[in-house]
Length: 137
Image (cartoon, rainbow, N blue to C red):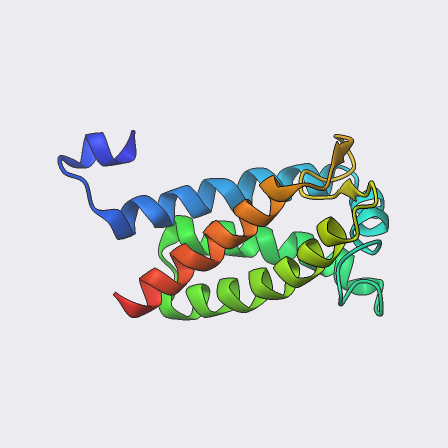
């Protein structure tokens, strides 16, 4: 919709708006039950397993990234942070999916009881790919 109003398609602008929406929506659901999210996230994230506080901070990092993408705040720094944070997240997700155990995905917080799946790998991978593309473009 933003691209249509802008009068032409710009891939980077589209990615920034897509990522803004993604991070804002996902952080909203995490913040609805922050403790529940942190509990679920600590079951598979490589940092949250060792340091429980990371689960609490992570939701606010997503909120900050969403706002940064929305306002185009230091795009290079925003993309580097996204690349690092989502790569670390992806490692835990791949480990969880590879274990073939039924693990509750914390991607939409504790509000929804969704199983961890390859969809989560695709979501994280897409965020990594888009942030890398914008860094290299």
